[in-house]
Image (cartoon, rainbow, N blue to C red; front, top):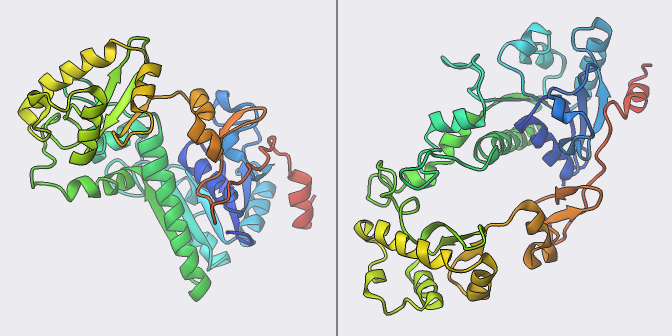
Length: 360
């Protein structure tokens, strides 16, 4: 879908490399400029899954010679992705003003936690901090427990990488029509706040409240996870009354008067306690069989390894198992699943990239 698009990525960690991988999955040519001293984190020493489908070259941004090579690469590109703290690229002479003087149509994608300006702009932070401040973490667990979400998914990927990708594609569309480049300021704190629009649309009408445990999806007995006898868990979220009825029927509770008032917050804690006991009495596989094929909106909580072997995900090839476990490219087009591209080694394409630039 993005064949013919060239993106230059300045190596970083987290959402910016993910955005580059996603664009490469979609067919863009992504050249990742890596650090000659090695990866940003020790745990990234081997081939990095987020480099999937990219070409790689190690260049020192503080070396005048390498910096000229970086500029030559950017001059040939449609877009740039960087995840530095505000001001770093400017100090290197690679800020938007310098780059747009050289390449007016380039879309300059900036990925940060706090944004390019504001009181926190130059402070350090990570996924959990950004979504905590934005409000996105507020409904993330049952009342009485510390809010927690799956690492990186809501902030780095949801509020960060996906908003960077959307901004890049929107700006590239305009550049194609007008020749005018744009600076895309993708801040995780902004994106994760924007992701709250659906919940915000239900405030202050009563479906969502500011007290944790009293809102439509964070308090009910029918919207949480339950521990099973073997230590596994089942997820339950039967929001619509017809699905709630199917849930009760699967459990043989359809005639129990205590479960009759689905949307009564006063009853939720007691009914959750009853369901705690019910689910704890049998192992997870038992409950998988009980709800199999129903519209009760119940599913087991699987590890990534288990998910790869699940019949539904296996049929869709959502996870790929070769020499490593990795998610397949998404979304798919015309219903066709796509295989993942090669994960390159660091600096793998140096000779090829320099040759194309007429350099050595």
